[in-house]
Length: 206
Image (cartoon, rainbow, N blue to C red; front, side, top):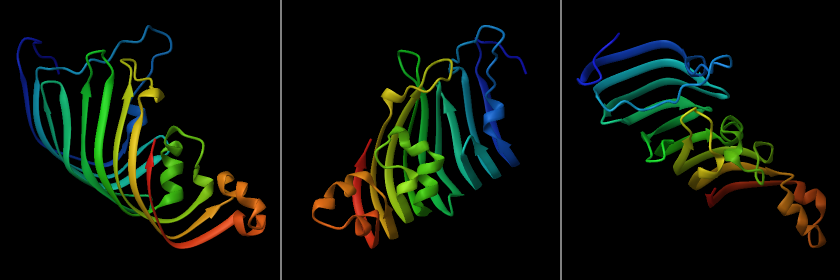
């Protein structure tokens, strides 16, 4: 579809899909010079969506629903609902372009009864190495804020990642977590290698 860059393109409707593989939609041309991605500011859209299954790299979700709008170069998804990592996720997100040209994603969401090991694995331990997916078991209910950025060639910018989690984990285990093993002078190493708990509440900032 072609349209004049000087005129607005108006879009309204419903988008549905049985299967969506997002990584295949983002194609990197290694032969020709990459073209920078610029959010268009002449598109006005309001779309409802329903996607049965979708994936991006390690992340998989099902039963996705949202109200999506695009206005003045800002993409917003409201009332997002989906199933993933053996639980449910709901929230809002916004994708925009900074003055420097970076793509910035901001989301405020709630996780309900999510498998915490899957969560850390699918999100690649949120860019940190202290607490990894191998250290955790249990189900989490978490409120979180996440801000992450990519450059105009869709390369991740890890130093611009910020995340804050208000975490509650039920029926969990902390497995061979290195900082806990430092307490071996006071408690036997065997007890520290596998710590079981009924409820753990904490706040995590990345």
